[in-house]
Image (cartoon, rainbow, N blue to C red):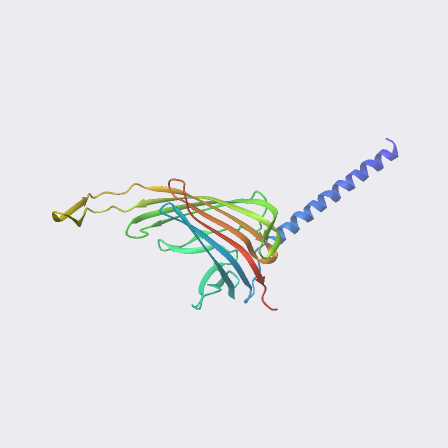
Length: 259
């Protein structure tokens, strides 16, 4: 075999090894960029939050600015002080896990109810959470929530705080409610006309309302150097498919704690 051919093959092998090495390095850097964030007491984010609600078929919207501050940064959990910037009331303290997942006590157990990130974040990665809550209140016997998360990939996004290169995560979900039985009730009313007043009594038979199911959707744009999202869209759809509520959060500013 000619010597120049051997050299050509060897050079191709070297280039392939270099390419594989660079690819491995790029992947490792990307993974490192989306590992669990490190918080410090005093890290502060301000968001503009717009909430749209469907009330009897009519949509109404409100906008406020919210301030989130890390008040305790532990190895597994953090405490976040949350309040509107125009409020004189004391802030609300929320407990979150360091990956920004949230837990709640249900049926005597600690249950994960939200997990927007499963670090490290990689394109096409998926995860799922599902929980069941019984005896929610006097009307609701039980509710079941299912949330499926998918990492969409990196994209540029512009919010009031600026333009960021963020990794987008989407959540598609369902909610299902079973109602508690309703006892027989009698409602009385008085109507008036020219002949005088008349009492009317309406009776509602005992029974159990039919279960209902609706949809959930959310999108998160996570930026590693911000330690959390720069934008969130969170939607809840009624059983008939109509939008029930939409909340949009956009970052106004991020102030890291002083070292």
